[in-house]
Amino acid sequence: MKEVWDEIRPKGQKVPWHKLIWFPMHIPKHCLIVWMALQDRLQTRDRLQRMGISTDTACVNCNLSHETRNHLFSECSLAVFLWNSVLTLNGMNPTNLSWEETVATASTSWKGKSLITFILKIAWSAFIYTIWQERNQRIFQHRSRSAEILLTEIIDAVRFCLRGKNINRLDSTNLNLCNAWGL
Ligand SMILES: [Zn+2]
Image (cartoon, rainbow, N blue to C red; front, side, top):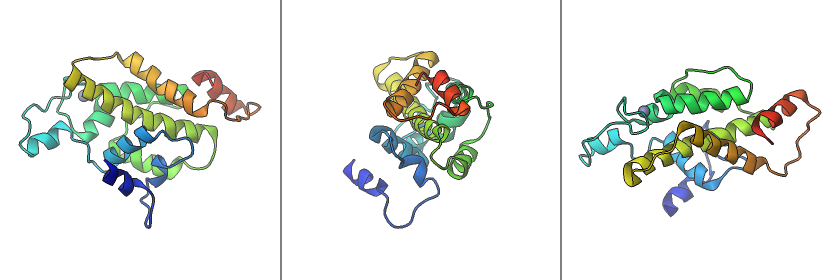
């Protein structure tokens, strides 16, 4: 774990998605899982099968498809529900982007210090972490939570990170975001 952590820390050449992980207010345990997802290093069931460790490749979050990184975080019905809920809270239109498209879009357009940028980054990290945590709970602890409960985990992460922060509520976009997210 320490080796992974040392590798994450920014040094030398930066990858395009560097700022999706390292930003003020990031949650370290989320950061680690996001980094592993971006590197496709999470032990998803397709990888375990290729390594001969497991033969069950079903996605436990939907039970409708094989579990791959791209499926878990972009194609799976749970992922689609959670991310589109985040976009809706932001007053944005739902999307149907692939994993690569999402990372490319996020790397190029989630820039600056606006409230919506921080919310998108925090929510995306929490989204990845929550999906991976839920998948692990379903596989290893045989416990599952509803999509609505998982959405509240993401909302709570955004509230936690922005708690006590000085937000300019005279800006109508910010005010709408504060109302939607309960900030
Ligand atoms: Zn699925």
